[in-house]
Image (tube, rainbow, N blue to C red; front, side, top):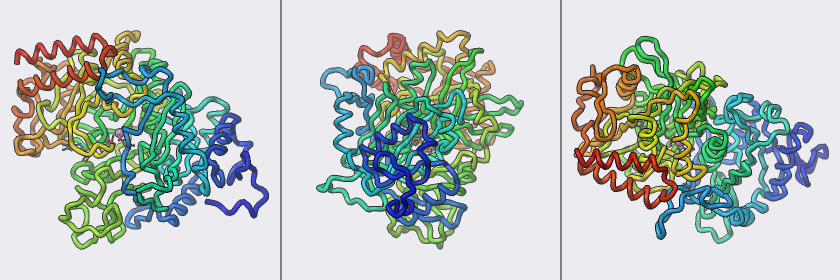
Length: 629
Ligand code: GTP
Ligand code: SPV
Ligand code: MN
């Protein structure tokens, strides 16, 4: 990035490696040792300590542009397009591991002969081996960046600090958007402990079969994402993409976060946080756990179609929650940006996102237009017919082409502060009080638009039973329905059975005012494969029913699966399309019989002895109810 240090003798050194831009005096001793340790392993050409300033950001963008990693998007203000290697486009769940001495601390032991689907365990010895096979010398000829970052507002008692060390300037730029980085973080940290996050895009072996371009170095064949919860340590190799490389996000805030949360008595969840103000002016906060690419960003900044409602956004992906002295569950969004799915976003589906993302944004793997803008599936009405389109791989693309213009997991990376509907209290260090928790997924069949859990235990069972169609957010290629309990399957930092016990134990918190729990499904389809529910802004009707329900209105009726809206209680006034409500809320017996079978098999095969009795009890109750349908 900077000048050649060999012609300047004024550089300080860490070990034998020149420190480009800072003084070792500004580094707390523990940070210094961590840098020294990583530098001696990775052998970078120099070291750059990120201060988070605008000048630094410009400098890095400039470097990335020269290197061909990003190109400017002159149609907008300070926006950039990055194209990745086509082999590095999503999270890689199969290559993600948690390391503990005892395997069962990480994952439930599956039934003999069955492959575990609730995370991957690696022994500490094998983790060390995996590191030594990949990291020595991996940053040769590259700069090693040191990013001090805070998850949560700097200095808040909820917040936690990490140091990410990476050889990717793209990662630095995205971390600057997604978290709070720089000098202030180091000052706040002092000589306290921090979460150690080491990342390298890697160097492929000589005989690698994957074509690697210098604009997006990576090593897809040897990519590995490792976590050591007992040492608060993350090591990620081989990928520059999203959840694999922005280590504050899924690795820290969810995997390491959930293990810290378990020990300290709180919750780290894959959830959006929104504020909703009803026509009477009452404001409430809702969190929602939907699997990756299943609608969190869209709900978090929804523009209600129901008059009189207002929605404000606190966060779109991660919630850290704990009960306060009064027994209120309080949540913060530990992030500072949105790393949102681009395809499907437009002025009809998500107008607030469209107002957010055309300033100070790094787009990754979207298509480009000849007038210096971006394009993706769903943006057809937003661009003029005469612009030419270049697809995410950099090839000419024509309308009607068989391959998508934007990669289905293409993303925008945008500062939260650009969002026009950000909640004024979004950075409140005490967190916002949560009244409602939603679970949901992509369920083309059988699952009604909305139902409510009868109580906390039933709600935890509903979270545990979540299933959803696979999406492009990870490496799964076909659209199979996968189990994704709590939308956390890829993100559990410890044994799912223990996680369930932790959730169940919230009833024991003194004075706990437990939020009401609901399950939603925007994605049910009819026999022609068309969505039954218009979704997006119309989802405000579902939120309206939820609020009236928690306000004690007589709007619910019990069913086999939980509480459903009473006939006629749902506000359908001026609904944008004809909806077959009967079909949308039906509970087909044969479907639910199969669902119960799937759940029973999953709990038996995957969770086994670690399944809490309370969850088993709820399953048997459901089975019994379904029998009577
Ligand atoms: P991650 O960032 O991967 O965790 O995803 P997310 O949960 O934030 O999902 P997001 O809101 O980005 O939505 C993913 C896709 O689902 C987008 O293409 C949306 O357009 C689409 N989507 C979101 N809400 C709805 C809805 O109510 N109905 C329909 N049909 N599609 C929706
Ligand atoms: C998800 O997959 O849930 C995301 C995107 O939010 S990533 O940061 O890649 O994990
Ligand atoms: Mn997510």
